[in-house]
Length: 288
Image (cartoon, rainbow, N blue to C red; front, side):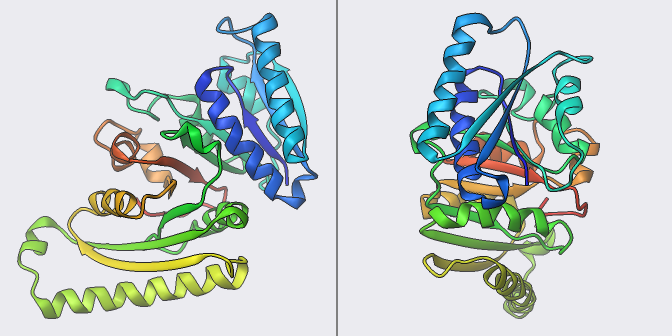
C-alpha cells in the first residue's frame, strides 16, 4: 500500500500531516514511508516551505517512517497536478484536508479534496481538524454504520489503521424514518425497526471484529430510530467525547455537489471533534 499526503503548506495542512504520519506508521504494507505531495503555488515557497518540510521529516523520523517529499507542477490547477502524480493503484491511501473554516462555501464544497474523493483513485480520507492538540492520535472513535452494505471495505481499511491506538470504538446505526412517520411511530413499529437495525449492526460488528484486532478496545454498539440521523451522530459524538467521527461520502452526494445544507456539511460544521470523510474505489453507498 502507498500512503500519500497532499500538503498545501498551511497550518491546517500541518495538523493533517499528523494524521498521515500516524496512519503510515500503523501500516506495515506502506513500507514505513509516506509520500508527501505538494503542488507549487504562490501561497508558500522558499525557506518557509523548506522549514515546513523539515518539520514533516522530523515527525516521520520520530514515528520510524521515511518521508518522500515531491514538489509538483500545476496541471490545470492543483487538482490536476496531484492527480497526475497519484498512482492508479486501488490500494493507494490519500490523506487530504478540508477547509479550516467553512463559511458560506462549506468545508468540502468546491475543494481539491472534494475532487479527490470523487476521482476514485484509491481510498481518500479528507479530514477536518477541530482538536489540533490530538496530533492525529485517536483514542475514541465514532463509526456510524451505513444501512447499505456496499462501500464498507474502505471504512474497514481506515479502522484497521486506527485500531492500534484506539481505546474505545462506538458503532452507531440509525434507522431513519420521515418526520411524519416518526411522529406517528408506535412502540410495536419502533421495536420492529430497532430489531431490524440490530440484526444489521450485529452482522457488521461481527465482520469488523473478525478482520481487525480490537481485543484491547472497549466496544459499544447502538441502534437508534430517528427522523434525523445527523442529529443522532452529533449527540453521540458529544456524549462519548469522541476524538474522531469517520463517515463515508457516497458517490451520489458528491455527484450532485455538496451544499451548505448537505448532511456532510452539517456534521463538518457542528461536530465537537475531528471528522474524517472517506471514500474508497469500491463504489456503493454509505451512511449518507
